[in-house]
Image (tube, rainbow, N blue to C red):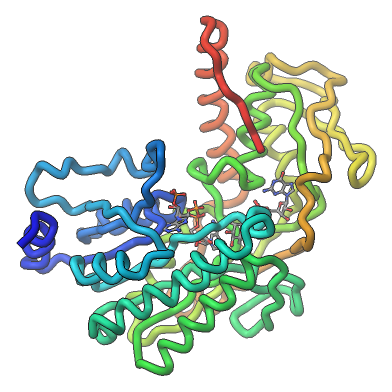
Length: 386
Ligand code: NDP
Ligand code: GDR
């Protein structure tokens, strides 16, 4: 028996539930791992091999492999490698698999469509097949991270479980395959497999190139004099933004039911990207005035209050539009109706968009203050914000 097998065997001897999370190093994966550990699960996570460390979001729950009785274990793996997935599922014998791993950036999916299809579409198939090949259909429950991007060019407002799909990107098309293959395996093999159709959800752990984090981080850096201007794409996009912590709770709930079903998860409220920028600036004591339209739109500082933004003064132009951030096909508006989740699972979101903005801005302001101090002391600080 190998060391890994021995460890797995020892773990499976007790009554703790076992979960396997793909994408554990991502925003949702890190919150979900914390959530499941607090519930007493043994949590296995799949991380990709990278040339630099990519575990920052789970470092605080990392457990030294040299100690006995670990309940959080990371495995190297990749959704493009079925042999690796089969081996990890075989070793861990999970009660629940949460498939959160993905090339999750919509704009990037236009640059790397084939890779996105492989990871986000076929990756889901590979995991479902791993369950089947290992004869775990009746043991292992499967959660698929589906997305409001499936609604794309929206056919109904608000969007719910019965709203027709109309994907608008290679990412959404790949996720549509993943959605239907999950439904298909549920129906064909009587597996407990379900889709959470989640609308946008954010946090201080959000990747730096998604719009919310780009804004809170970018404005905090400008406020501290580390950067001069935030370059944005489509300011008119409307999104239904919730907090990731609320949404991972729902991922778990979906796997605890008698029957597997698909659910929309959303707040039922939407604001524009411009409004998100404006509200974030207000949290920093910056009043913005937006003028112009499309690529000519600018955000000018109209007033500065408090002491969070020593780096800006009235009249500074700190927001501009750069067409390089426009997408070949845009999803202009998304607004979810999570009535089914509320009625069947008792799920309601706890965090409002303004509370989330507050959390993200104060987190990024703390980081910016640290970087400003480093810079004042003569250290080089990189501030890229693509
Ligand atoms: P992130 O981009 O933060 O995390 C994605 C995770 O997938 C990371 O751990 C990443 O690893 C991993 N990953 C990427 N490629 C591969 C691969 N080839 N093999 C294995 N793992 C891989 O996404 P979120 O946490 O925000 O989202 C989680 C899931 O939910 C994703 O599937 C996303 O598409 C979906 N979703 C997200 C929504 C949101 O608003 N956040 C809304 C609806 C759906 P690494 O850290 O090394 O990059
Ligand atoms: P989205 O999130 O595409 O909805 O996908 P993102 O934050 O990237 O974009 C939201 C909207 O903002 C507009 N936008 C910009 N977006 C980025 N990234 N950068 C900019 O500078 C910018 N300016 C304007 C975009 O055009 C878009 O309309 C996210 C991901 O988490 C997916 O994985 C998930 O499935 C969906 O949410 C639901």
